[in-house]
Length: 84
Image (cartoon, rainbow, N blue to C red):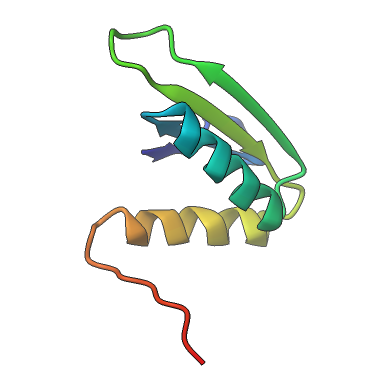
């Protein structure tokens, strides 16, 4: 799950994942995609184990590109493969 925080100027993306391992992988990828800051915290709102990763971007186009990519992939109808 990915959310856009309610800030007036959007500079952060909030990701909610179900495992610490996935949170670590996600954090590494977000840095490669241009995140300039990350915060990671356990969710306090429910009984399930959820990790909240918030990524800060200083480039609006990059932020929106990551957001749009996540929205497209979340539909479950996209497969990605590295090819020659």
